[in-house]
Length: 136
Image (cartoon, rainbow, N blue to C red; front, side, top):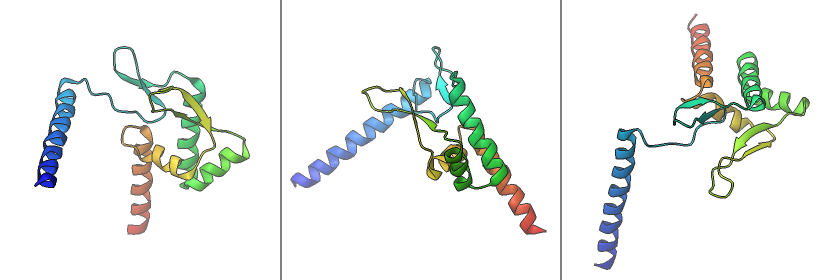
């Protein structure tokens, strides 16, 4: 009986927490972590990151991926040129602090496929161009 009550209580707590998140979203007060290259301004609107080094890194990833269609080729270019890719800390200690580290292929794909970034558009364009080539 104890286990059943605990499961029921957990279900109620989960429902209340997710209801609270939906309510925040309905009010427009829910701020989710943004992909690299985007930040919230003082008014809470999403804007491009004002840091020029971040903008340049993100553009280089998209441009290289658009040319090569390969996450490994993007990683290789960053390594050859000695470049690092930005990331922001998401934990409470130092939350939002900008760090630079070696670029991994998974970060390239994450950046290029996140729906909130222009990179998603480039991935969709690449996929549609490959599909049109295959269908010919």
